[in-house]
Image (cartoon, rainbow, N blue to C red; front, side):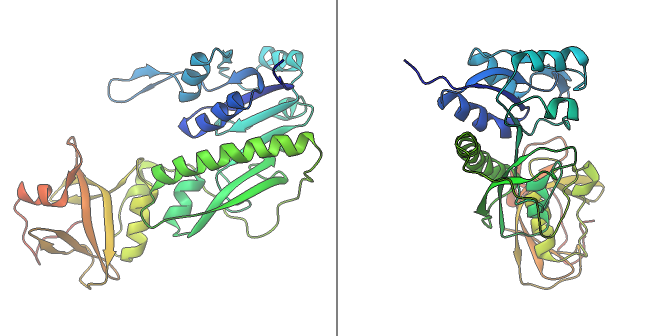
Length: 311
């Protein structure tokens, strides 16, 4: 006879939440319901796309609902009738109201991609990189009515590598976080976790806007390097060359000093001066074109070393 555990409801939306849902399935959890955001139009063609969590849930034969409003009375009644033991929340995208928080027997558990109370909010991975952190991590917490303010259950530190960007770090944290959720559920059931109030320095990670990717060449090479890492794949760090909008996909800081924005090398490599040090561009994407190497970008343009600027 299989070891079917008490019922869980799962709230999640993007790719980051997928490893946790898969781990719950692999752990033979009884998933009563998967709740995700409504389908939305995406891309230039505005084609309607389902959230990644919906696709996985349907593939695994799980029941899915996509409430337009999280406070919808019929939806809340559905949750009450299910009488779940636990709600697991991973990057769902909406704050759960108190009417929902009180439904699960053991509470609503959130997986957050930072070491709370640092980087509360919607974009902790991106801001940890932009701010130049060397260590981040994942936290499971009991949700309360605040923004990522609930008591901590478990945490795990994760080093940030120099070649990490928001995409690679997200993939890493999603997998580590999935394991932490399974551990949290097991220890909660066995009474081995005492929730601990958050202490320490509080910081915030608001949702990124397109304009957050604009490069200020007066900043240091390290700051620009971190911006490039933290904003990939969205919104991407960007600048302008002769009125052409360019996304900077990958770069590395170097010690060479030059005026901010000045193109100091543009033959076999592309190097730009900053407020402190320089940036060597490795991958770049002109507007409306594919990602290319710096050398490919140089070949198609007339660039005057020591005269032309990136703005």
